[in-house]
Image (cartoon, rainbow, N blue to C red; front, side):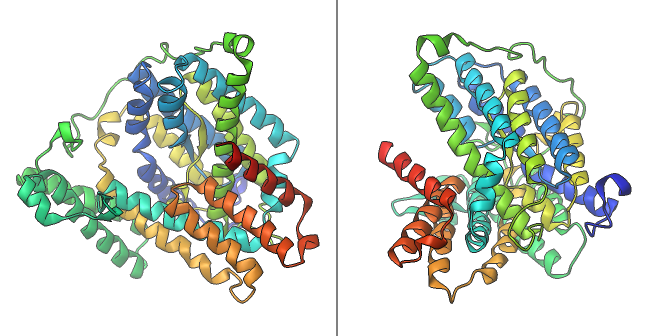
Length: 454
């Protein structure tokens, strides 16, 4: 493993990579429960989706390890699965077989773009300061996701506000929702303390400690499961289970849509392509910046392999029966634990395979236990903000726009879009348009057209 993954060269070791891989998986395990729920709304078999998600995640993560030797882990992308189910199938009225066909075509296009260096060129065209801004924005974004998952941040008349314990007591929901919010807050403090003390595996330990506290609360009757409201038992219902058959979703494509409604098919395909391209690039930029993997020119040496792994994962996922496979921003949790090589991705991939046989355990991991990990990882990622050249306003303002757009607009790709558009416009208006690369102009025009046609 030392020779293959170049652990010493990357400043890591087997133990660190193991902890990093487990940590990343733990922060991503929710996808195994959420993806079948979302895609199941289309009429797809939920058991087959669970199996497809686990298998595709493992295969894609192994590809990341062996093609790029990077600690990034992949699975069915959130947002893309919702677009698949609620827009393409339930909204536009197409069958889930047609949606899977579009995802398969997307993966094929991505492979061509990766092999022809188009996606790599886009990555390299983004200025260094803007890349730092993307990293910081992702940090705030995943922190916000953690706060939402734990119900610390909730909907309100002001769009978002903090959870009210007094109202939960009056409504009689404290023993289900209220106590989990309190446990998540305690988990943030515990994980933060472990980080301050430099405890090895601090984020992973924080997840387990928060989960165990929840189990103790359930045993003591303080936490009362309420499945109808989405609050389930924290105690695994079992240990071992056999994987559900993948036959109901395996190779279930419908290519007739291409001949019958080509424009509709390509509009769906473009939507998948656009979101995935810039979500993936944003994640790679953010995580690579945090891990100091970018070279002096702001390039990621192994990016071609990383993009190819992402493309292969999407094609394999479509064949097995799940929506677009993409690099997960939660990979930053493993990087925060010291993960620097493909061994991290291998370990996470193996746990996805284990989940097929131990699903009762992994499905019992509550979101309030992984939320503290996302909040603390967000803190670790926003430290990149000091690298932004704040004295150079022409560079700093686009970075700032990218930073605030990601959490406030709830999208990595929107942060990159607005960051690039503002970068180009401000340089042109300042009379420094010649310093902007041609590809940045092309990207800015495409983004403007995208917003004009929304």
